[in-house]
Image (cartoon, rainbow, N blue to C red; front, side, top):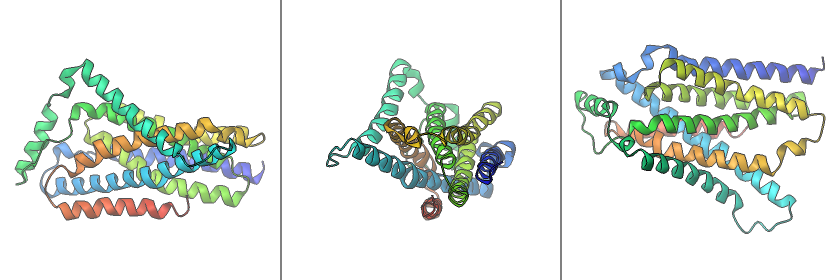
Length: 292
């Protein structure tokens, strides 16, 4: 076996194992279930959720959006088109409005889905138990399953392309460097996904299945990269991939700004601590972007 092939196969299993472990930790341990938490435990989980929100924000802006814009720019230049128009930003915005339209259509067809729920009442009630008051309603939990699905789909697209990039590397050093960068930010992101699934009330079996499917995405992309490494690698990095990455980035930004951040920042308790946790999560992802 060639050394490069052996390293890539090792990266494949490392991506699969790390994603499964980090994603299943919040699901398998009841300590992460915010519904049954009270007092200090609940505040710690809230701040942990803010850190994951910062990780998602950093992943969306510093990784997915940046890579999508870079891909669109390189592909547009191949067609010898003028870059005066922001094509990348346009496709990302289309991804944002696509999910916005799908959710609005679902709520229009099922008006009852826009109403309140027992989960929302419990969360608001929990705030009063802790001695806090709410400045406004939390994001409707009825939308959380849909937005959780969109979150997983957008991250899955991105994970496939990350694995593809690792599989297309031509040297051992470049493969290891890129794989370590992917592992560093993917571990945090998938932990945040698992935490998000738990805190939105997803059943354990569906949460585990979601993490399992998500864990297979990067190895799938890496396997595809291995399959095309001997041929024309540019064919795997065409305009279609750039467009898909941009749409995925737009959908991810929609979920981050309209679901994750509003839910974590809804309560008025410890606003500076929440800001610090969100900033810390974002800063870590920005640091990883130096090597990604």
